Image (cartoon, rainbow, N blue to C red; front, side, top):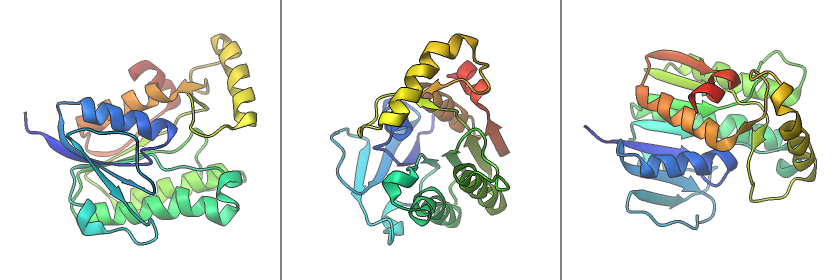
Length: 215
């Protein structure tokens, strides 16, 4: 088996941290690069951690890689403004996608959201849709878009509103269709990594329902 290299964006986040663990544990990868703002509390022989300024990434230290996993994401509250949110959820992913295309990355895999639609009147869904549209136009050999619903898992920071919603979601999951049912971050990560490794040609969109079954 010919081993590959991966770059994981958002490795300190809910899904990204799980994707990172899976990539490090996989025999398919011999090198996993993580561009981060602050150090991860992790050591692994495959892990290459790069502390970077996302405004000016050292592209030639990060690429080339075979697969990119983009798990970047924030909230408007944390970002401080709509423009701050858009920078993290649109500008950074597209900047890395442009670099990945230049360095001939074969698969670009991104986690967006159920409801992503560039024509949506909901700002969050609109930005997620816009990043999807832009990625489609870049045209990788293989593009994977994972669209989870509400993510379940323990975040590094405490979000009271999200905690309350998650509690209700868990209680009512038995009666909620899998198309919109809250989904564990670990399930999203497992489905995303397994599908990325298949390197399906063209554009591939994985729904929340599909991730529940695959992961």
